[in-house]
Image 1 (cartoon, rainbow, N blue to C red):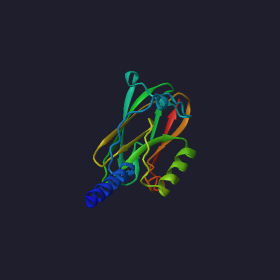
Image 2: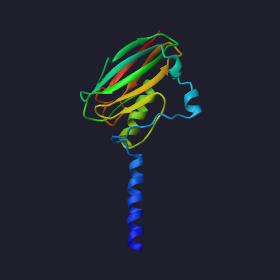
Image 3: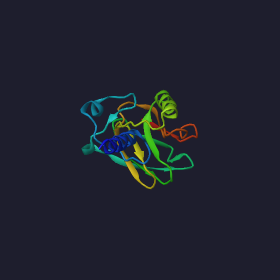
Image 4: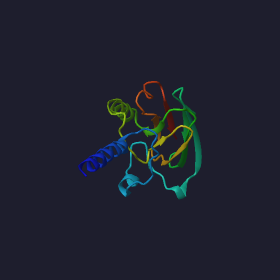
Length: 162
């Protein structure tokens, strides 16, 4: 009986560690009302009923986004489709340069860190992810893959909001 309890305890602890691993996990898109309402310097979560257009990005193991620069109109609500054409996990995260650099450094220290916000999507190899975002302010903003080492390898891009 003690042996069975030990085996179950070990199995549960191993499974609980998997919850925090980034790996090939496909994250659900269930955000809290606070996450959906939060205004960031680069905009806010968009209303899926008010999408004005869709832009598709391709992510590759050459550590690039294609396209790597886009221009949008202030106030547009855009559905971003991120397609992972590579064999590695990639992600697309919008933010300021300072936020993205800081987050990339954290990912180096904690590569298994799990995080989910409306301005990011994690995409397994051969799959697609989605972000619906409204750019509420004009300016030049950034996006990047923050998987450990990908940002430093140049997996970044820019959004110009006019």
